[in-house]
Length: 399
Image (cartoon, rainbow, N blue to C red; front, side, top):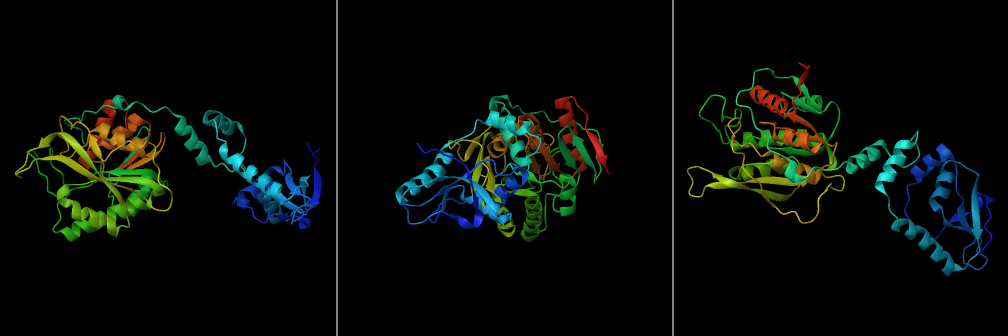
């Protein structure tokens, strides 16, 4: 075993390994060197028996970072090996680090203990994401559908923002970027899950119940343009790599796909909600399913937090009552999609709030929902639905 000792070398006397396969973040290492100096030596091959002398076998990127910072010298230990042994040291030094892993709980605690993250290679977002990943998820069976109130008092006016615990609701226009920025408060969303109008002019038996206002356009072109604006506005506040789920009516598939294409969205799959009961209509075959467009925003690897056993058919019970919203989705269904594509503590955007099923799913799964709803009546419904379930009171923060 060689007698290792640390020596000081001039930066100009050394060179990086001529076949180094490793790619490192020199800027991040430079930040670490600035913050706390060099705390371990690099390894230099004297090279008496090799084709290259004074080459760095371990710590190439530390050397490059020191050089970038203008250092004149660097600390190193030395070996004197031939070309084959030098290559083995390089490969082992890189690969053995790859084979290691982290104990996430210990890592999270250690990151929380240090006084500063400067130069560590860890950001506050990394720390928050790790902490969120360690939060226990509730079992799917524990997510319950939440009753929708029959008659919500009139409270909300257009343009107002309300806070519901960890969630935010705005009575605004999801096609307007300025409204979306107000809703998000300058932040970004980790998931976009929404159920837009279907352009089918659903009208029910009473003025309020089973009626969706602003759900009928003069022609397909107008409807596609409406959707395109809403999609672009949502994508602008969605982080790269984050998923989207957009529910739609099968009869409007062509319009939804056209709008998604115009908005620059890549649809990866179409999911199918297989309902427990059908919806009675005038067609020969009664509708017993609803489709959902699934994909993610380009620019980063997509986020997926479930296993590889999930299928495109989602079997969930249809809400027993949908008196306040005719296309209402069950809360467990929304919670299922939320859990697959986000973590505890993440922000989930719903740009068409409806009766608030996405918000109620976020309430039960530990996410923060930011939801937009144009109709003040449905905003009232969302407020009362959340208040009845949590026993808390929503607060208006703006007009």
